[in-house]
Image (cartoon, rainbow, N blue to C red; front, side, top):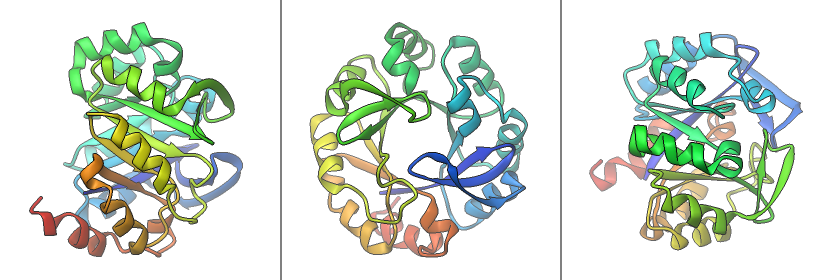
Length: 245
């Protein structure tokens, strides 16, 4: 199972939020590119970057930091936050990212999602963020009326390469992942699911690894890495190398 470090960008800095709330922010670095190199040096094989300002505003806001990250590392970078039209998607790829994540646009503009999948194939990822099983959009500040699992099934039909499933209530809280929700999502789809939200320990990672057989292919880890609760290199050795990745 792939361990994917998270880099959340706000005002050009590397931060972490609690439950996606801007008022609950902790700044970890003024140099996101250096943080990206740190995770690559520890063995990461992919990075998860979110433009938080872009997610809230609906348009990119941290392009300089994103470009610096892609230049600083050799591993794939997946980017989400504010990608809501074709032009923004094209600019994201021009910055050097390998995959783009559509969240709000996937819910509100299915035609755009289909167009981008037609252009970029499985380099397009659907990001589904949910509270109590219901999808949330627009930087998590607005709820939708769609059950997360139903939405994921629909997006799978459009040809997205993966689904990133985030339990908002657990994100940044170090309370453990919502294993029941993750298992339901993974077993409902044929494409891989990347789990996100709440991972606090190696024990949490091992519990998620038990869901690998259902289709959980990776897990995004943020707060637990930044707080030192999980050592990335040790986690990779336990979760990836043992399976021959």
